[in-house]
Length: 128
Image 1: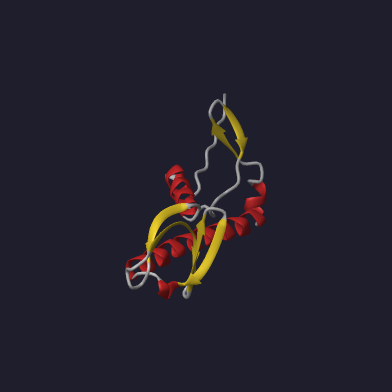
Image 2: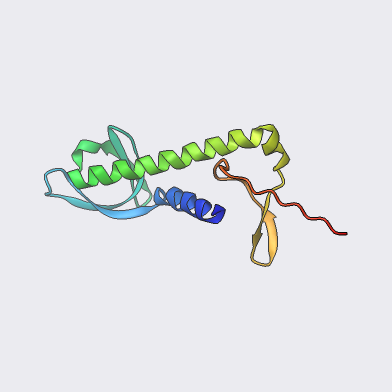
């Protein structure tokens, strides 16, 4: 379950990092290739090569506007989850988890939370 949540969050974050697509102008007469960077209510930012351009959302086709708004919302949710995780880690319980590690290949590596946990699993083991 936790792995699924982390995978989902990671994929949402990656959605905003270099999502190449063909963009179409509002009148449909022009197209260009570019990587989606971000979007707000009025503008969209697209990266073409090493150049980053920000322009009015209304200059894009209806389909591209909808897509950009959806992707922008996904990125906003991912950022909000990061903030919640940071606030959680500053709390008492979070401070106890500062030394989180995860299994990576054959060994353990340090791990930072991507989102505040919604569920906890407590495990207790004792030997006789």
